[in-house]
Amino acid sequence: MHLRCPCVVPWSNARPAQVDSMSDDQPPEDPFGNDDDQPFHGVPFFGDLAKMFSGQGPVNWDLARQMAQMIATEGQAEANVDPTVRMAVADLVRVAEMRVEGATGLSTSTSGHPVEMQPVRAGQWASQTLEDWRPLLERLAQGLSIDRPGDTAGNPSAALMGGLFQMIGPMMLGMQSGMMVGHLARRSFGQYDLPLPRARRGELLLLTDALDGFATDWSLPLDEVRLWICIHELTHHAVLGRPGVRDRIEELVGEYVSSFDPDANALDDRLAGLGPELLGGAGDDPAAVQKALQDAVGDPEVLLGAIQSDHQRALLPQLGAVISAIVGYVDWVLDEVGPGLISSYEALTEALRRRRVETASGDRFVERLLGLEMNQATYERGEQFIAGVVERSGAGALSRLWEAADLLPTPAEIEAPGLWLARIDLPADD
Image 1 (cartoon, rainbow, N blue to C red):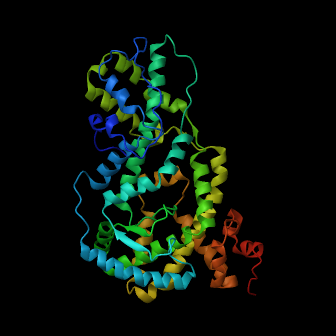
Image 2 (cartoon, rainbow, N blue to C red):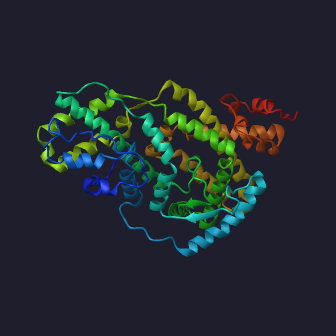
Image 3 (cartoon, rainbow, N blue to C red):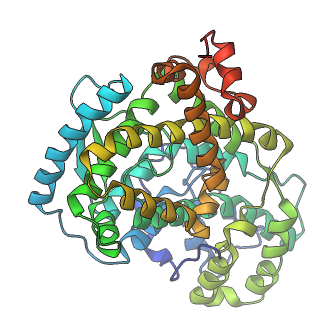
């Protein structure tokens, strides 16, 4: 199942005057041209369409924001979070913070001030996530770019396709980025459902509506579900806040999204019919143009034109080893501190593990696009690695994991904890 846009985006709402200030890029050349020699000159609707695409940079952030908000909020206005919810969460955070720091020996703060957990609605989560992931998504846009060399002078159809390729990349990445983040906003509990570093802030985002719905669906005490997510988020924050860990993940994920081998033929096949159709008169009907372009970019699997490269396949085991270690460690911390605080811990943990297995295909697409394989095998490898380290050298050895980037486990070590212990010169108990 593909992520699909539930409606046609109203192009009239995306005029250049409204292009988001998030983009500081210089306007590119007009992909359609403005003089009499260009194939689009005089074609109804394309003048406005060309203006929409000008100045958008590698990702059309205005479109991304519109899509993310539309999907996250389902087109409905969002009320502020009830102040009583904020106060309840604030009390739980202090309890979780003390226990996490005691179990890990790590500070949960990256700013020197106590961490705040901010309950938000899905729309606010989506907006902040797009902002936090902007550098990563722009690297992805560069990795997915398709060069279209060749002289198209005197060939209206070729010029048309060249213009479409020049415009389609930023629009496509804007639409797909917004759709992905919007869908994640409707499913996530906090900001670390995907273990990616975020902008350094003193507050973490918590989606209390999703948590409340989960507690109701599974007949679990609401405060205990909220306390669980506080422990989960604070532990991730403490680990991902370590400079070596943060730098290594940003390096690996950034390199991965920059290394796609785009398939120009896939995009050619999907867009081949657009040029003749529009030049043949469909340009007189803005609704027809909208629908044609919408259909063309509605399938992320095809239109991203992304083929995994050999370099990416080589990166995946390295990235997978680091991610497994992190999620395995977070689960270990939860198992250490959770049972003493959460009376429903066993039932809650089982419900959450089922939720992992039942992740929607749309979320799996996001993970694969970013090189994150958050499947059951990833969690099991992490669990076995952490258990192996504790069994051989005690829980104190785990703190060495986060001291520097070169102390993170390799793919071979995540499968054999003894190799990691030997490499960092920690003795194993007989």
